[in-house]
Length: 356
Length: 275
Image (cartoon, rainbow over all chains, first blue to last red):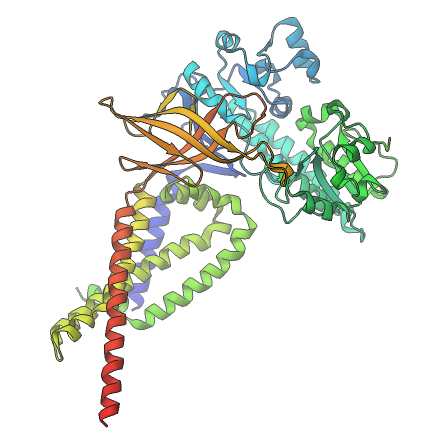
């Protein structure tokens, strides 16, 4: 009997040993993953589960890998339609690799992009929904980072590798922090990525430590009000998780799904009546300059507490192009939730919405 | 030879079944909590083959995924245990031969038929997760075509029609799609075209492949300008026929068991009436 048990364990260990060398390193970053292999290649999973092979220049790609799923590293030129991803290239010291973006120069806050668009070193591909593919073909970037999966067939035809950085489920806080490690292999900027992650994590720990000593937990909702609909950040999102970490009570914790998830007006109203604070992505640029305007937009939810006695915050224009300053954004959010813990602090990425 | 006999005896033990089932319950209880901690580690099981998941997410996150790997080992042992027990019992039944009627003798095999079905059903899942195809994100633009992975069949997106909600009662739904009809043409290498319609809850089957709708655009009467497209999940489940066979065998075993139970009940009742 003992011999059988020993044999069974030996068989199990042999199986495990067979698995062990199969991969040198594998890191799951939410729905993304980075698998680094001994020969210097990487296999990445993008936001919708596609596998992208990163192969050093001059090295033969693995057999069976299609050109459309192959990126030569380190990349020399990048195109993107994402503000958030572009700002992360700053953290990776790779902003000079950006050769094409969508949008006009005045829409860009990042000086390198704005200047590049002005002096012609970076090409504007027009608007996201009507991209200038001729310009894109001229640039022929090594890789295109996009949030829009419908770009894939067209870019496949043009022979440009596509990486979808959007996900079906909202990104959680850990993914938001470590996403930079997903981008690092494209540029070989591993050190910068590690420094970024360490910096943001240290700030997060500090926020948690400060919030630990506070008994009162302000009730927070994060959502966008439209004339007939309301969208919220679900409980699985980084937004909800930072509210919790900063000592707040996020009232949509029971809601799960994609970022900016539509929920029933009744549900929004019921939580809104309890909330002390609301954060919204709707800003004066989209015609939502005051609480009075928000009440008039959707009269059904006009009675929620943040629109009367509570506070409403919205992000400033540079917020969406500041992913490289995630640590500062987190501190802003923490200071909004517990201002007494951050005396004299001035918000840098958010502003309070006026009454009228 | 002695060792083989000892293993055979151990695998055929009823005590082992009890311990394995207790082990499975314990492991699944642990899994319930560990899954809640990091559900994103398990989500890729929807698109990866089992082995690919084990050597990536499974192996590199053992602090969370150990329960799943242990679950697979225990399940494998339970299958071996069931197989050996069934063989031993069937052999014993065959050795003793028919004591009553031929029908009684045949019906006595019914529990073992169900055990065999259990093994077939688990094997079918293993076949699908080890040898199947689960190609996510096959995007096709309107009027364009794309190849079905691993085959020469092309799929073309012919049209996208949505049934739009025009009522007033659900304001948030107004102008948005209630149902959809995604018209596809499946083009064989010889040029033969098969036209089929796809929707979220109506996948289509073609030449051993099943095609499911993952996403499409546009979904509303007035939408942000974007290219119309359909995102398809293309699957091939080589285990599906085995699964249906297993289910059919299980149904036969269950009916036979029920028949036997009714016959025994009736015989007992008539014996009591005579007494």
